[in-house]
Image 1 (cartoon, rainbow, N blue to C red):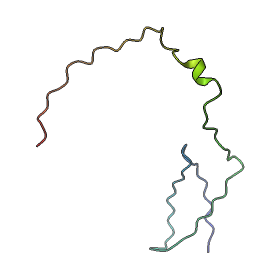
Image 2 (image 1 turned 120 degrees about the vertical axis):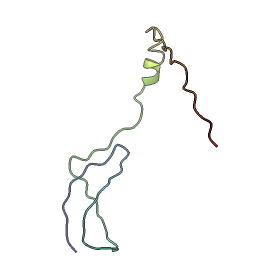
Image 3 (image 1 turned 60 degrees about the vertical axis):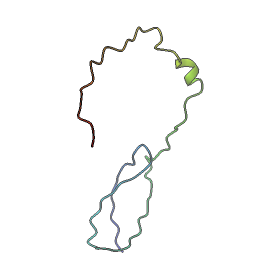
Image 4 (image 1 turned 90 degrees about the vertical axis):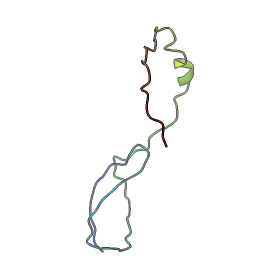
Length: 78
């Protein structure tokens, strides 16, 4: 057994991707995760009153969709 200290950051969805060359082809290994003191949970809930505050916020901004032009004609799939 050997210890390979490596620090990495998880993605926003909580996944961690590591590529560690072990020199052990086709071997079973055990990975132990130990969060550092910087680790923190992310609150993924909408703040109270968020939708009431922002619903319709762009209604009076005069946003208009510009012309998208004509679609390009393509050959049909066979």
